[in-house]
Image 1 (cartoon, one colour):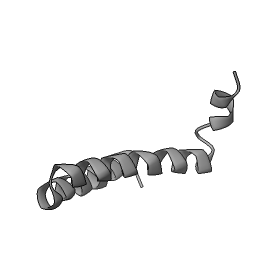
Image 2 (image 1 turned 90 degrees about the vertical axis):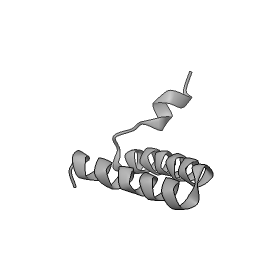
Image 3 (image 1 turned 60 degrees about the vertical axis):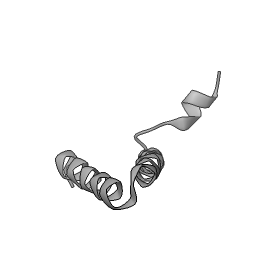
Image 4 (image 1 turned 120 degrees about the vertical axis):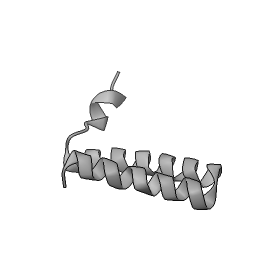
Length: 55
């Protein structure tokens, strides 16, 4: 799936959450989507969380 398609799907999900659920549903979907993005990038290997922990 291309980045444009993923962005379109995320934007539509946020739009539906905002329209049908209100502001708090919009924020919940936004936060959970960001958390899912971080977990997905870490699982895929594109985000190295161990490098950020060691200081």
